[in-house]
Image (cartoon, rainbow, N blue to C red; front, side):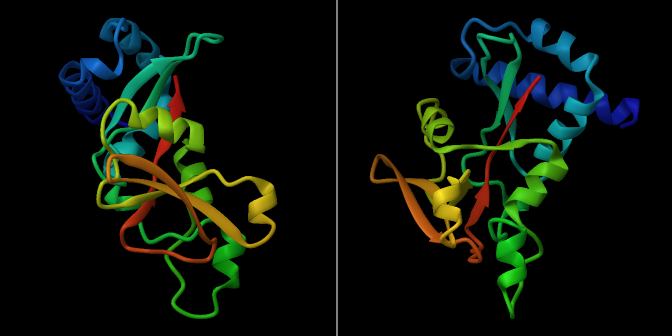
Length: 181
Protein backbone atom coordinates (compact mmCIF):
# COMPACT_ATOMS: atom_id res chain seq x y z
CA UNK A 1 0.00 0.00 0.00
CA UNK A 2 1.46 3.33 -0.98
CA UNK A 3 1.65 6.26 1.44
CA UNK A 4 -1.28 8.13 -0.12
CA UNK A 5 -3.59 5.10 0.10
CA UNK A 6 -2.44 4.43 3.69
CA UNK A 7 -3.07 8.04 4.73
CA UNK A 8 -6.49 8.07 3.07
CA UNK A 9 -7.46 4.83 4.83
CA UNK A 10 -6.27 6.11 8.21
CA UNK A 11 -8.25 9.33 7.73
CA UNK A 12 -11.39 7.35 6.88
CA UNK A 13 -10.92 5.06 9.90
CA UNK A 14 -10.40 8.04 12.20
CA UNK A 15 -13.47 9.82 10.84
CA UNK A 16 -15.61 6.72 11.45
CA UNK A 17 -14.04 6.23 14.89
CA UNK A 18 -14.82 9.84 15.86
CA UNK A 19 -18.40 9.65 14.55
CA UNK A 20 -19.22 6.42 16.43
CA UNK A 21 -17.82 6.84 19.94
CA UNK A 22 -20.55 4.59 21.38
CA UNK A 23 -18.84 1.59 19.77
CA UNK A 24 -15.53 2.01 21.61
CA UNK A 25 -15.97 3.87 24.88
CA UNK A 26 -12.73 4.45 26.74
CA UNK A 27 -10.51 3.90 23.71
CA UNK A 28 -8.49 6.80 22.29
CA UNK A 29 -7.76 7.08 18.57
CA UNK A 30 -4.11 7.84 19.29
CA UNK A 31 -3.64 4.38 20.83
CA UNK A 32 -5.28 2.71 17.83
CA UNK A 33 -3.24 4.78 15.38
CA UNK A 34 0.05 3.75 17.00
CA UNK A 35 -0.78 0.08 16.44
CA UNK A 36 -1.95 0.64 12.89
CA UNK A 37 1.14 2.61 11.87
CA UNK A 38 3.41 -0.34 12.63
CA UNK A 39 1.18 -3.07 11.20
CA UNK A 40 1.14 -3.06 7.40
CA UNK A 41 -0.64 -6.44 7.30
CA UNK A 42 -3.53 -5.09 9.40
CA UNK A 43 -3.77 -2.01 7.19
CA UNK A 44 -4.01 -4.23 4.12
CA UNK A 45 -6.83 -6.21 5.75
CA UNK A 46 -8.64 -3.04 6.80
CA UNK A 47 -8.28 -1.67 3.26
CA UNK A 48 -9.89 -4.86 1.94
CA UNK A 49 -12.70 -4.54 4.50
CA UNK A 50 -13.22 -0.93 3.44
CA UNK A 51 -13.08 -1.55 -0.31
CA UNK A 52 -15.73 -4.29 -0.11
CA UNK A 53 -18.14 -2.04 1.81
CA UNK A 54 -17.56 -3.25 5.36
CA UNK A 55 -17.00 0.13 7.00
CA UNK A 56 -14.64 -1.30 9.67
CA UNK A 57 -14.56 0.35 13.08
CA UNK A 58 -13.11 -0.40 16.51
CA UNK A 59 -15.67 -2.22 18.64
CA UNK A 60 -13.51 -3.09 21.65
CA UNK A 61 -10.23 -4.29 23.02
CA UNK A 62 -9.11 -7.82 23.81
CA UNK A 63 -8.57 -7.93 27.57
CA UNK A 64 -5.94 -10.68 27.31
CA UNK A 65 -3.75 -9.32 24.50
CA UNK A 66 -4.62 -5.62 24.44
CA UNK A 67 -5.37 -5.84 20.73
CA UNK A 68 -7.97 -3.49 19.30
CA UNK A 69 -10.90 -5.29 17.72
CA UNK A 70 -12.14 -3.99 14.37
CA UNK A 71 -15.40 -5.25 12.90
CA UNK A 72 -17.47 -4.53 9.81
CA UNK A 73 -20.03 -1.96 10.94
CA UNK A 74 -21.83 -1.26 7.67
CA UNK A 75 -25.59 -1.09 8.23
CA UNK A 76 -26.12 -3.99 5.81
CA UNK A 77 -23.93 -6.97 4.99
CA UNK A 78 -21.00 -5.64 2.93
CA UNK A 79 -22.08 -5.31 -0.69
CA UNK A 80 -18.71 -6.45 -2.07
CA UNK A 81 -18.97 -9.74 -0.18
CA UNK A 82 -22.37 -11.04 -1.18
CA UNK A 83 -23.54 -13.88 -3.41
CA UNK A 84 -20.95 -16.29 -2.01
CA UNK A 85 -21.49 -19.83 -0.81
CA UNK A 86 -20.01 -20.86 2.53
CA UNK A 87 -16.77 -22.72 1.69
CA UNK A 88 -14.77 -24.42 -1.09
CA UNK A 89 -16.52 -27.79 -0.60
CA UNK A 90 -19.89 -26.07 -1.06
CA UNK A 91 -18.64 -24.23 -4.14
CA UNK A 92 -17.29 -27.45 -5.65
CA UNK A 93 -20.60 -29.22 -5.03
CA UNK A 94 -22.53 -26.80 -7.25
CA UNK A 95 -23.02 -28.17 -10.74
CA UNK A 96 -24.60 -25.02 -12.22
CA UNK A 97 -24.79 -21.31 -11.48
CA UNK A 98 -21.68 -21.28 -9.35
CA UNK A 99 -21.06 -18.09 -7.35
CA UNK A 100 -17.80 -16.20 -7.72
CA UNK A 101 -16.33 -17.71 -4.56
CA UNK A 102 -16.83 -18.66 -0.96
CA UNK A 103 -17.02 -16.85 2.36
CA UNK A 104 -14.23 -18.79 4.05
CA UNK A 105 -11.82 -18.32 1.15
CA UNK A 106 -12.56 -14.61 0.79
CA UNK A 107 -12.21 -13.94 4.52
CA UNK A 108 -8.89 -15.81 4.56
CA UNK A 109 -7.65 -13.83 1.54
CA UNK A 110 -8.60 -10.61 3.32
CA UNK A 111 -6.85 -11.74 6.52
CA UNK A 112 -9.99 -11.42 8.64
CA UNK A 113 -11.97 -13.78 10.84
CA UNK A 114 -15.58 -14.62 10.05
CA UNK A 115 -17.83 -13.66 12.98
CA UNK A 116 -19.25 -16.45 15.12
CA UNK A 117 -22.77 -16.28 16.55
CA UNK A 118 -21.64 -14.75 19.84
CA UNK A 119 -19.60 -12.05 18.09
CA UNK A 120 -22.49 -11.29 15.75
CA UNK A 121 -24.86 -10.88 18.69
CA UNK A 122 -22.31 -8.66 20.45
CA UNK A 123 -22.07 -6.45 17.35
CA UNK A 124 -25.85 -6.08 17.42
CA UNK A 125 -25.61 -4.50 20.90
CA UNK A 126 -23.73 -1.59 19.27
CA UNK A 127 -26.38 -0.80 16.67
CA UNK A 128 -28.91 -2.36 14.36
CA UNK A 129 -27.28 -4.27 11.53
CA UNK A 130 -28.62 -6.47 8.71
CA UNK A 131 -32.18 -5.16 8.76
CA UNK A 132 -32.54 -5.96 5.03
CA UNK A 133 -29.65 -8.39 4.47
CA UNK A 134 -28.13 -11.36 6.28
CA UNK A 135 -24.58 -12.46 7.08
CA UNK A 136 -22.97 -15.90 7.09
CA UNK A 137 -21.33 -16.77 10.43
CA UNK A 138 -18.83 -19.42 11.52
CA UNK A 139 -20.55 -22.77 11.42
CA UNK A 140 -19.80 -25.57 13.90
CA UNK A 141 -18.21 -28.64 12.33
CA UNK A 142 -21.14 -30.85 13.31
CA UNK A 143 -23.54 -28.72 11.25
CA UNK A 144 -21.14 -28.22 8.35
CA UNK A 145 -20.42 -31.96 8.11
CA UNK A 146 -24.13 -32.49 7.41
CA UNK A 147 -24.08 -29.95 4.56
CA UNK A 148 -25.42 -26.92 6.44
CA UNK A 149 -24.12 -23.48 7.32
CA UNK A 150 -25.39 -20.72 9.60
CA UNK A 151 -26.30 -17.10 8.99
CA UNK A 152 -27.85 -14.29 11.04
CA UNK A 153 -29.88 -11.14 10.58
CA UNK A 154 -31.98 -8.71 12.59
CA UNK A 155 -35.75 -8.59 12.09
CA UNK A 156 -38.61 -7.41 14.29
CA UNK A 157 -36.15 -6.01 16.84
CA UNK A 158 -34.55 -9.43 17.36
CA UNK A 159 -31.38 -11.17 16.17
CA UNK A 160 -32.09 -14.49 14.49
CA UNK A 161 -29.78 -17.39 13.61
CA UNK A 162 -30.80 -19.62 10.74
CA UNK A 163 -29.44 -22.50 8.67
CA UNK A 164 -29.16 -23.09 4.97
CA UNK A 165 -27.34 -25.44 2.66
CA UNK A 166 -23.70 -24.33 2.56
CA UNK A 167 -23.79 -24.33 -1.25
CA UNK A 168 -26.57 -21.72 -1.34
CA UNK A 169 -25.92 -18.07 -2.08
CA UNK A 170 -28.07 -14.97 -2.22
CA UNK A 171 -27.69 -11.40 -3.44
CA UNK A 172 -28.67 -10.15 0.02
CA UNK A 173 -26.35 -12.42 2.04
CA UNK A 174 -22.70 -11.61 2.63
CA UNK A 175 -20.43 -11.85 5.65
CA UNK A 176 -18.92 -9.67 8.33
CA UNK A 177 -15.36 -9.94 9.52
CA UNK A 178 -13.30 -9.25 12.61
CA UNK A 179 -9.67 -8.16 12.84
CA UNK A 180 -7.46 -7.86 15.92
CA UNK A 181 -4.72 -5.23 15.75
